[in-house]
Image 1 (tube, rainbow, N blue to C red):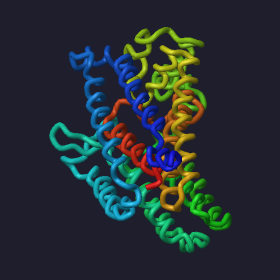
Image 2: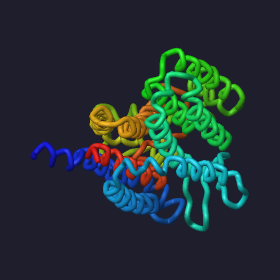
Image 3: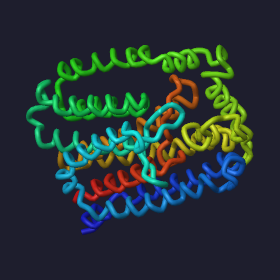
Amino acid sequence: MNLINKRKAGDVPLLICVTFLAVFGCVMIYSASYYVGQVQYGDKFYFVKKQLIGVILGVAAMIGVTFLPYKKLKKFAVPSLIVSIILLALVFIPGVGITNYGATRWIGFGSFTMQPSEIAKYSFALFCAAYFAKNYKKVKTFKGVLPVLCVGIIFCLLIIVEPNMSITMCVGILMLGEIYLSGTNLKTFAIILIPFLIAVPLLIILEPYRLQRLSAFIDPWVSPKGEGYQLIQSLYALGNGGIFGVGLFNSTQKYRFLPFAESDFILSIIGEELGFFGIICFFACCLFIIWRGIKIARNSKNRFGYLLAAGITMVYGIQVAVNALVVSGTIPPTGLPLPLISSGNTSLIITMASMGVLYNVSKGE
């Protein structure tokens, strides 16, 4: 009886850790943005107030999803796919799509804005799980995985023309991961993997700004006031933090030295204020979520739950890894938020809702 009750309770520590990181994100967003908020908007709480709304809605979504048996999500796989494609297409409609810093990645109606690619990642994970669970006997052949491959390519094309190389890579890696976990043979996987590996350098070569970012990655000091500026400032922040940091709220890089300190590069501020020790503690929380996700997938009693939990965990893990590698200068700069931490309500709410689904899979219902 105790084992049954434990199973029904689900993975509560997962939800606690997710909520903790979301609240921690609000603290760091305030620290990273209060100067810019005061100077630019006349309100030092400008960014954190928006994030707090996201946390409240995210917690509500996460809790609400826990009451929906995850197996019922199968019937939403195709509809969510269609909705995601429509939303991604709306980005390119004048008056609906919103352009910032040369990229059109958002749609807006009045004061409401959202980033469709954040929704697309999880709807694709849901579609992969539903398709492979239903067609598990076909996954050994290239023809069997072709529907997932086609949908993945459509998503990648719609996202790359925004342009958004980072989310494109995230969807591409997710696609490869789901195909591999579906049980396909190595020959079929290799047929898919090789063109993917060829496509990445081609996408970089085709766009001059990506070549400039690659150059900045190789040697940021070639253009210290241009493409290399953000990486240099990020490294300054991390270096300034040392072992234990300069103290919470005491960062100097947030005073408009480091662009996007409250969003894509918030990890640099965490490193500066909390130091190497703080970074290690933060990654320990991230790894805890990833570990729980892997455990939930492994313990799932059906293919759909296994692939859905694996997909959600991969999306989270890929984003954390890519953001950390960019901020530390390990890979070329690309704009990708740090999930649950970076400023941005679409990413926050969708990520927290996905964790509610992961919790539901852990209940085994």
